[in-house]
Every structure is written in C-alpha cells, then in structure tokens.
Image 1 (tube, rainbow, N blue to C red):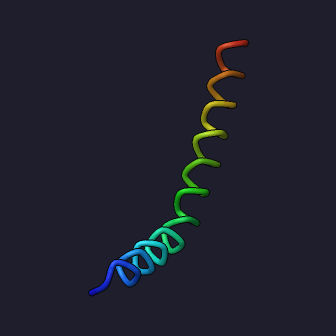
Image 2 (image 1 turned 60 degrees about the vertical axis):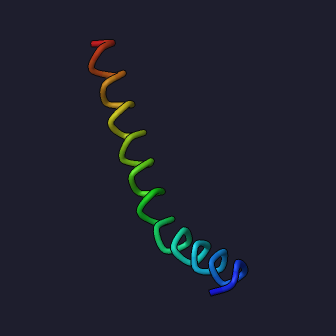
Amino acid sequence: ITELEAQRDELKAKIKSLPQMVRRREANIDENEWLARASYE
C-alpha cells in the first residue's frame, strides 16, 4: 500500500465518521445549554 493510498483511506474513514462527530457535538451543545439553563433557575 502506498503512502497516497493510506492517506486516501484515512480521509475516507474521517468522512465516514464526520456525521457521528457532528451529531455528538450537537448533542453536547444541547446538553450544555440545558445545564446552563438549569443552573440559572
């Protein structure tokens, strides 16, 4: 396997995991927002 092929496979894997990361980040933001509101009340 060449260096270029390895990079391409790595990129494919990153792209595949991207939606999960985005979803996780959104969930974290929601949770942080909820915690912030809960601490204000």
